[in-house]
Amino acid sequence: MYRRNIGHILYPIACLLGLFIVYQAWFKPTYLLTPPPSQPETVVERAKEAPPEPQYTGPAEPEPKQTRLIDPTVVPDTTHHELLETIRDEIEKGNVKTAEVKLTDLPPSLSSDEKTRPYVAVLWNNLGIQLEKAGGTSASVYAFKKASSLDSKSPTIHLNLAHAYWELRDPAMTQSFLEKLVTLAPNEAFPHLALAELFQERDRLGEAARHLDLATARAGKDPAVQSYLKTVTAKVRRTEKSDARLTSRDSTHFTVKFDGETDQATWVAVLEILEEAYREIGQRFGHFPSKPIVVVLHANATFQSETGSPAWADGLFDPVLGRIQVPAQGTLVDRAWLRRVLRHEFVHALLHDQQGPASSTFPTWLNEGLAMELSEDRWSDLDRMMKQDYTLLPLPALEGAWGELPADTAALAYLEANSAVRYLVDRFGMHQVHGLLSHLKARQALSAAMQSQLSLSYEQFQSRWLDQLQVQVKKS
Image (cartoon, rainbow, N blue to C red; front, side, top):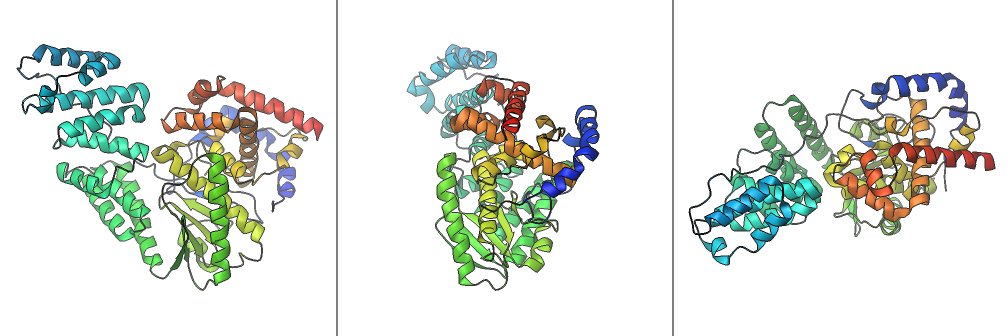
């Protein structure tokens, strides 16, 4: 497999950057953890003749409307008033198991009576919120479904259900469901954001842009949200315009678009590599994309201007558009390079699909390390660097965006990510890695996720990885 040699870059900086890294990592962690944003986060693949630059980030994706309680104070005056009041109190106390049993065992007449039916829906909605607090979105969605079946006209209940569907990437969040939600909650931005995402996934960018405009008009005056929406809308409209000149070819799981003249041999090779990656990496990772992935092959002369990528980039995955983008010319000259780039970016797309909305906060070193590990894009340079007593960056400093790291420091960051994830997989296995990712998908911090899934602290993991690395260096 092709592997770029970056030793000539890393060795000269060992002495020069050692003290700088120690100072920045331990005494000024904000330099590494909170770089100023520039544009929506994009995962970038390294160039062949330059050190790997960090991914760059931008306005944070705004959180969708959070789940909301409905005031259950006024209990309907029925013969079951006391029972409904008891269930309400149990929910408010957080006694979810007791409340769930009592709600499930309610007499069928309560769910069919026009007077009590809406109130039972309120109880199921509020139970869903308590279930979400205790066990995450997957534990709550059935309660929101039950509430919506009892009250088909409540905007709050259906917004809560939509939020759960969105978090889980549930296929029940269909176009018709969202259009009904728009009717129920005409002043809410979230249904339009979800519709825009749905149309982006279907590669219907004109309709996606229209719903982004509608979301912007309903998003209030929050500067962060407005900045995000304007940036994404501009990107979608720019992409829609550039797509007009592209031709495309489809395989079972990918759509490959071409900018300029691309011969049959190129797109056949690209689709073969991608379908191989789909089978091999998907099987190893235990997850397959929920929708076809768009891959754009740009003419080399326009790759940088069309994607907004720096001059050194080989390729990138854009999570806003859900696309892999690479320069096309000369791809068959070095098929090993093409295979490495496409497989690496496919892993980023796979993780983005698997993590859903939580991918926006996914630790960068884990993201890059998994992409290198699963695509078999491994580097050995870190072993040689350790022989020079090079000071490593602490892993917590590599969780956030790498946009402000100097290029040479970013090279070390990629090497560390590669090594740490390889240790994670070898020591604990993919089953445990999947468990860790499930905690992260539920928005748990990496430190808490490691403690829960691996039964050791973040500090212990880093220490054991470094011990193993030292042993490996001595053997080499």
